[in-house]
Image (cartoon, rainbow, N blue to C red):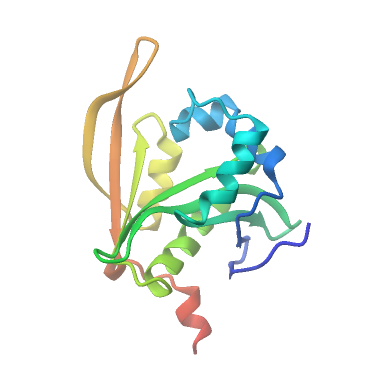
Length: 186
């Protein structure tokens, strides 16, 4: 597939989401290892429901496929949700769909690229992420790019007999210094 290259990094680039990868994304969304981390484990995601969701994703925010630059394969989705242009804030959501693409640094770079877009294109001041205490990979990536923990909702997530905290982290535009967009202006 020929993806649009909206924001380009070294390992990956971000391409606007459309419904062309409905089947692939539906498989990711129904993968237990993905859905348990996104909080969508109880959602019934059919191909039809996934197509509709992808079609509407950019109406409610800014959504991108994370595309591996080495082979031009979409490997995940990253997006800004609940964008408020008055208060200049949003919530970040991200997942890498195929486990073989995790731990490669692409998720970290994709997070930096969308933060660059958030702060230097649509002029946000604060981006927050909500994750779960068992999602240590997400917490590590967020800390690596500059997010700080701002609170926890204790024992908010229950899977079987296991209880986990919901973890809230954010980053301010003044804390983000790794801009490819601003470098492109020079």
